[in-house]
Image (cartoon, rainbow over all chains, first blue to last red; front, side, top):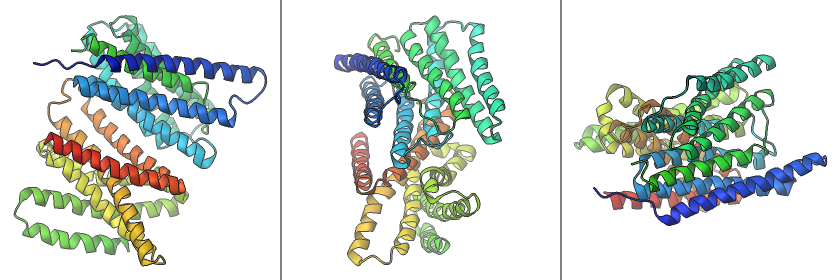
Length: 250
Length: 215
């Protein structure tokens, strides 16, 4: 059987994308920290425009790169990874367009959540599959990560006396995110898929934090968390492409 | 009006189904008929949401309508998944899903057309062409995504991963999100409508080329 491989150019591009994301993260966080310390808004109007442009571009590039890599290698895991980041990207583009349309972020939870949670729906099979391939035991104490996240969400809901609908939705979301975080931590601790695991953990932690914040303040933008999402997306893409190039996924 | 439109489309097609010998054509026509029926049902539910739930027209367009419409269009797919999954193993299921989307769009396009009677003949034609190459493709694509997912899940493609219901749920989420994204893009006046038409046309051509090269 002919083994399909990802071209070297795609791998180089994935590393370049990760470097760009890391640079953008450092620049954005520095500017926001400086503005915060000098008592100014975190980002100016123009700053937000650039920030969203960079974020959406990096997310689209990560999805596209995984799509090309999946096509070249005929690897389903890469395709699933691309689908996950793709749905999150679509949701974020929708979220950004709403900000420009209405002049403020859309109230949580919105239809965009379907895309954000879509990432976890396909990431659960992906992380479980990788853990099975790695053939490592998952430390029992990692379950505390899920318990901690779900507990924080339930606690915040109780403190703010939210509606039943928001309570149920946020707890279900936290459970999905927590499950992926659990397997992600397991991959980071003891497996050949550490880079991917790190991406998954960062992504889940950022989403978990967003939910906890959004319960108390539903019309919310979190520019200081945004860079974590796009850096994680590039980590996920670069990780999967590297594993396929090194034939660990075959 | 939507009921009359839906009946005007579905009755002749139902009569046609009885005359057609080819099973595949009958299967596709039945999905198209369901799509046009779903168009009527969606208008009723959306109307109720507007009047009873007290949501704005914009909120309906960009948030609630996609949830309702994608669910209704996918009903026959869900029924097949639960009752007769062997039908999902046939490649025609993807086209059938697209047919349901097109049937839905036909009723929706007619209803908008009737509401625009103040336009001149040329403007009306332009309006119809615009909707036909953008909204119709969008409705077909979103239901097609759910159909394609069910088709691949019914085979052996994703056997190594398990969690099949999660992939079904994912396909519904993506369909709703694409629909909502389309609806929000067209609110950006001329630029949004241009993007909607171009994306509709390009995605249709790309999908057509992919289909032609693979089969």
